[in-house]
Amino acid sequence: MLLEDLRREVAELHSELPRNGLVSWTSGNVSGRDPDTGLVVIKPSGVKYGGLSSSNMVVVDLDGNVVEGHMKPSTDCESHLYIYTQRPDIWGVVHTHSPFATAFAAVGQSIPVLLTAMADEFGGPVPCGGYARIGGRDIGAEVVRILANSRCPAVLLKQHGVFTVGDSPEAAVKSAVMVEDVARTVFYARQLGQAEELPQDEIDVAHHRYKHQYGQH
Image (cartoon, rainbow, N blue to C red; front, side):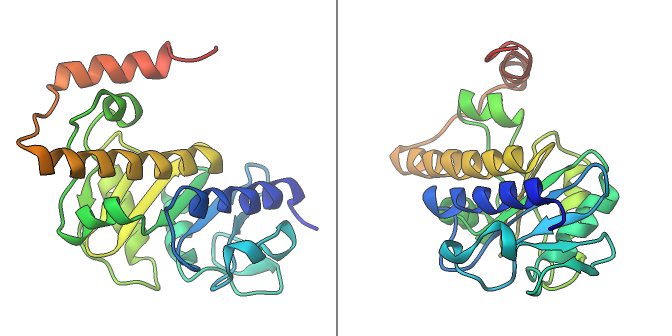
């Protein structure tokens, strides 16, 4: 079986999506790109999360050809592949319709930085891009366009959902979890009253500390 370790990792990371309330039924997907071959492992289309395993992950090349797998890949596969072809620094991509973050996407609003946790993780607002049609590379192109002008590893797509990227599939999943967490808190905060955004200098200091001092090195 090709890319056995990456297939296992991607299959296991899919369980984090329903566990963290990011998906319903079969929506959403995780992919990972192998640094040695350039091949991509992605979820099969329309399969329930409880039925996912390393053996039914689909391996594709960057042109979308199925290299190994007995199921067809996710309908978002072309968007994932476009992101990988345009951004050689990205090794993991996640797509969800997590409810609070997608609520911002539904009305075409970015998520502002109201919280130090958001400054830490994202270094700025979670931007909302335009609408793009599902099923081809249009969504991937819009994600890449927005990422070019943002240090945030997450993008909201108007009237669609959330895409996150990372230097590993796990990093992209973490960003997806954190996007939903901050979106929920910002939504609730706005119900209580006027919410004040953090100034950019505070965002920069918090983000630098988190990236270079937080945790074990």
